[in-house]
Image 1 (cartoon, protein in one colour):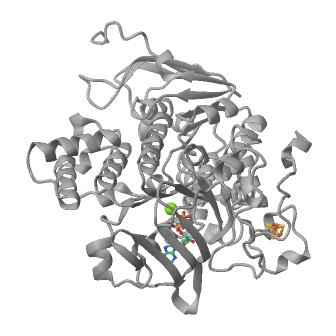
Image 2 (cartoon, each protein chain N blue to C red):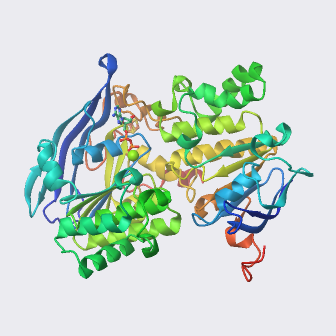
Image 3 (tube, helix red, strand yellow):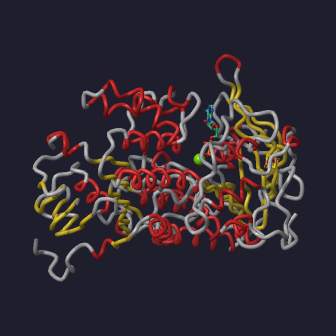
Length: 333
Length: 226
Ligand SMILES: Nc1ncnc2c1ncn2[C@@H]1O[C@H](COP(=O)(O)OP(=O)(O)O)[C@@H](O)[C@H]1O
Ligand code: SF4
Ligand SMILES: [Mg+2]
């Protein structure tokens, strides 16, 4: 519970979200387990974690874009001026017609695949603005498309290019512009800064932040902790498919710092901190240990950790770092 | 020494990306090269690793000017380099198991007898345990695949490592782990490292010195002059 939140009614309420992939020979991959969080208009929740921990699967579940071998349980309720919808049970026709693009804008992880190859960026932008905001064809529409491109730092002199004529970074910015164009109440950004250099990362996160401040809700997924720090109001740390810490961003990146041992170690790996990697690698989601999935890499583990810890007061750990303690690495530094 | 002298290179002779760039790397030294995306850092990295033929200028490797590029480079020069790129998926043959991916340079240079022992040394070094070595690229994460690509880059014990945005797609922990492997290798072998990227914090922490892209080329007072 974050005391600082003025707590407008949440736009998105996720409870017990669990995704399993059915695999050959009866195996199953526990990609997301029991995720729970709220997201209010005007605020940004950043989901961080190592690659493969389940971040993108969580996003796909919210969009109804899971592959056929996946099974999602729990609830994910989107409540906005259009109504209230459980994203996990809504029929695909409804998701396609009224949710994706209109109520949830998406900045996808691989932008190239998201752009229509046979049409220029300008024509895709104009069509998106026209369809989603009702602006009629003409000078107003042209201007709106150019403005949206500029917000995503997409250069105006590249608007008449086709997607294959764009570098990875430009394709990323084109996809961002398309997502901003729809003005959806909830924006879901999966690694929106991949392939951008630091200056553009900063510009993109700042624009997304402005967009959020203007009353939109943003769920951003990233492995870039510097970008996360720049934009987040709250941080959710994911490890082996579970949210292991959910914290106020200022407290998380500043003092007292994270409370979950994994989250602490992840921050300590940063080049402006200890630059020390975590030992070992995350467990396979198809073969999770019965207790805490981090135990094999954790220097605080005890026999109690053989039972899975539940998320309590924002942290899922039997021995969290007390909130008032100084940073662990200060001892050894 | 690895010396790049007055390199002019690019993809169209009329508008070269590199217009007279010079850079020297000493053995045992780690140099960070900073610059925005699209400025030509990767082209420079490829020229340095003898993977891209410059239009003019010379690359001098321990006193010997390079005369061939890519597969036409003399084997002794070609194998002096280990190279890593940003996107492991683009540089890894999707059909190969990670073990074969790592061993590929040994087989290609007629040293299959060393495969088993090098794999035994390198797999724990880059943190690839369990059954990961038997998997193919689509069965592992980007971070795991990049670990395999790093092992492949080290398998011939190169004197120079060229790392082009090696960690740009990776999380903080995998980044720190891979840089630690490179640094241990540098310390133990005296290899030189050229680390190209746009993350100033990372390159400052990692390298002995960092140079900015704009410091390498002559001032563009007369951009038409070659
Ligand atoms: N279609 C699928 N079938 C089986 N497993 C999958 C599928 N898609 C993703 N996964 C697995 O789900 C896990 C989480 O993947 P992902 O959400 O892409 O991670 P992240 O976005 O955090 O990098 C990984 O172990 C991945 O291999
Ligand atoms: S529950 Fe135990 S093993 Fe897991 S993070 Fe906490 S202390 Fe470490
Ligand atoms: Mg992902």
